[in-house]
Length: 223
Image (cartoon, rainbow, N blue to C red; front, side):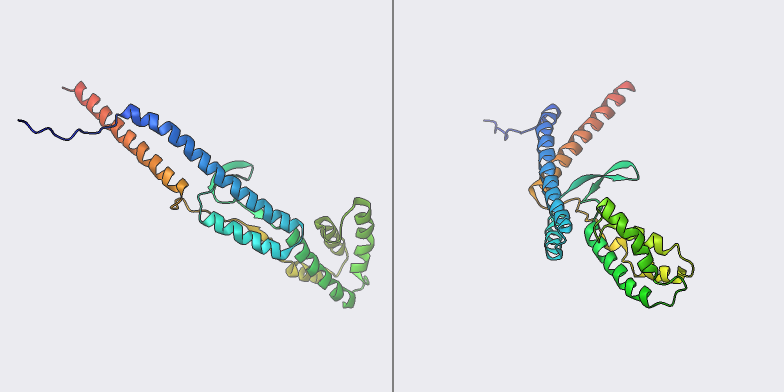
């Protein structure tokens, strides 16, 4: 009697394509869930910044970093008017924390300006006489960026204040210190990562089979 060989299990190309469709849908769902989670964590950071709670900012930033660094996060960001896909949070700013730091530097500069021997007198007080009514009229708070810009603009109008103005600008913190942009890895051993790996393998197998079929078809033309 002839020995029967083991039945060979072979998936046809059209079956692979059928499998690929729900796999792609699952990939998109998992990536969207990770993106939504990242967005919630980032919004928590911005909410803490708006509440001017430095401890909460540090805590929420730590949670955001841990999540982004351990998950695949695909995001669409706007860069110079054009949208592009990136891995991670994309750039965001701790605007209120920067304003508080800038205002603190401006307050420190106030004492220096009061003691400086300037022919125009106390230029800080002169600038405040202009900007304070504008702040009251427009509802600007003491740490509003518009009030800070107004003060710097008015101070710069007076002669012999170039050196003082340079000192003020030098004392202002760099905006880059308050710009955050966390990048996520392209692959991590999570459910999303493994599903993307399976998807990539299926696509490669389909492509190779199509390439082999195409080569065979072309070779028949020359037989």
